[in-house]
Amino acid sequence: MSRTSGEKNRRLAALGAALAGTALALVARRAWSLNPRAVRTASSLALVYTTRDETGARVRVLRTGGVYQSATYLDGRRMEPVFAYYRAFGRLFVLRPDTRRVLAVGGGGFAFPKLVAAEHPGVRTDVVEIDPAVIRLARRWFFLDEAVALARAGGGDLRVICADGRSFLEAAPGEAYDAIVLDAFVGAEPVRELATVEALRAARAALAPGGVLAANVVSRDEGADVAFLRSVVATARMVFSDVEIVPCTDDTHAQEDNYLVLASDAPLDLPDAIGYDADFLGEVLFD
Image 1 (spheres, rainbow, N blue to C red):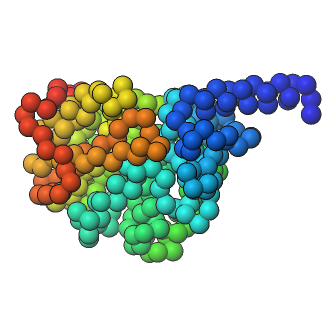
Image 2 (tube, rainbow, N blue to C red):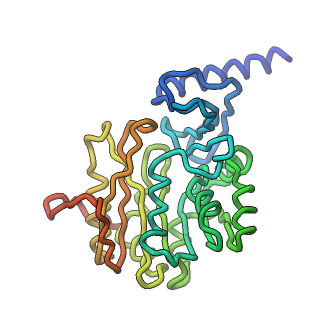
């Protein structure tokens, strides 16, 4: 190994140790694996590395902007989501059992599309991810190609589309999808352009009658700040007739709280939805 290569590896190892040290560990401060991979994406430097969960199972994580973006098991559960909010997206199939066409805006480690491929044969999932580097790392380290093959073997499909999510929504044909999932972030920051009245109107136009929109919304300040959640709910109520909030926080894996905002023109009637009144609603978001 050359001196230059050795210095490069030491710098990467130091970077990985620094980033890992700032996160909540997947398990109580166990050492994560050697050989972390640093990948330059459009928005920031991404780090891919392997740790272990509370049972000792190996888990590969994708970390950008100081937060976890996705994770995958490395054993026979590699199509099963690690994080609770990805599993919560599966409620779309409870709300609308006849779902056969799904749009997911935001790829990351493709955790939810992998779940669909494994557990819902016959479903066509379109995943729109703006960053080609993220798609490449998902293919290399997060079993994306295996999920594509699995979906097709089950009579469905998993299409990966490199495009801007808002532009894709606006160009989508009417009534193209039974469900739409919004899960796009730049590091820890949500993509505001996907949460405005105009964006949600485009999503509603792309939904079949009675279709369901699901958006992942994350708190700030260790759960104390839910201003963006309040705005997303207020904005969704301008577009859809029924808007509900479901908590899906994973205390083991996350410092912030995750909420699933579900919206539809059909009644949702979720038994575990969080009740709210007019005082809860925040600022309506416009372009």
